[in-house]
Length: 296
Length: 320
Image (cartoon, rainbow over all chains, first blue to last red):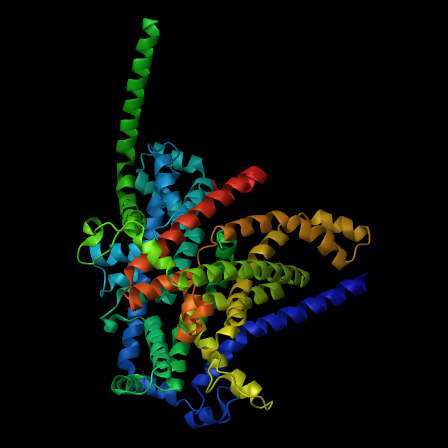
């Protein structure tokens, strides 16, 4: 009996170690690709154990720091501003709907909920944001469309407010003639920090990793590219060259494409911040996935 | 009789007064929430109205209202192309494939993770298998490229050629991509999905297992007889939710991972990539609008239908 259990536990650990390696190895290959010497690369390709290692790609990046630093700055800016907007809008909507005797509560809840059931899709959304809201080729094109508010977060947050904030506490505050907004900032927010930080975390991750807004809304201003858009356009250029025979325009593109090592180095740099702070938010991340898990 | 009527009128007046008092009390809260509601109008509701464009001949100069009607022209045009069939087949096919394999694999990992028993080890495994879920699909495209690039890729240079086999031009051969895309999708989503199942498993009543141990059940028997049956409701809910997304596809996966390579379109085109390509690359708004319209409407129908079914069978897990 006991032997059986122990055997199973060892087996479980072996499987989990194997799966963990499967998750990590591609990242290690990427890292190795970024420090492989160019000549070695042409001979042996990307390898987990490159024969000649150098950091020229990173040296090059730090020398020609302008474009990449700019893209990095834009990513940081968009993430910071977008997440702030998202958290505040989510919080205010959720708090309003957490008031049980609110006139119009059901109608407003339905208004929010319905956006989860039905969507106009990409093109009407693109037309509205670019033709009517004029966010195209501006920094707002990266911040506003789609990412600034999620109905599901509002509903999660509202549920958190109604179930985790003691009603007595709010009533007592009301007795002491505390205003409704005062209660939000003095009671509800301090008591909802775990939930708020989860919303902020997922929003920040979505902004950091987004490239679709840039793809749709930045058609001319590639100086506004975020780091993800830079990665995307480099890969597009490589692909373009492969599919088209050499002519004047492709020759021009060739000169714009950084070497493979540099491209891989930019990719590595784009995930470094996430990997560095991941250990600090992994618990909140796992919890957030479990809370929102049913949504998928 | 008269008195009853009077009290009714008084009641109404009192109620109205209360509502007005509440409206005044909550006025600052409404005001603070207003930007959110306005945002939803612009971001969600206006595009819903924009769906009528599927029946119009859209011109960017004339806008939504003034563009002329086109009847079913966009739809006949869409179905006149071979891509209509391909994109629906691929979207639904991949969704079913991902759903079945993803669920089985996630449950397997969740059970294995539970059998690790040591809390600290479980925490480490969970943290590490979630890493693929942290990065963008652009980056996943780079990771896949590092393996599959025909000139430098690890699979060709590190595995096939040293074995004396010929390298494969992965990015030009459509037949490999159903496998590649499925592996990539499983790789990046199994951690996320298995953690949802794992959280369910650790919530189970421990007494079932204790009783089973007393009766001399092996670990294997416990899994088959206790864990799996208890997981059934969660599997049903998650499956139904996934069915609701049957017509949606992850644009990033199907656009970035195959590098939007034209030679792969037959096995990598889904509704979302088709909509993007026809709109932004071919500037063929009509087809794009018709495809997007079908995706929205069919998606909505599937959500309503699945919810109706859940309400009949498992009322507690119905979405609404």
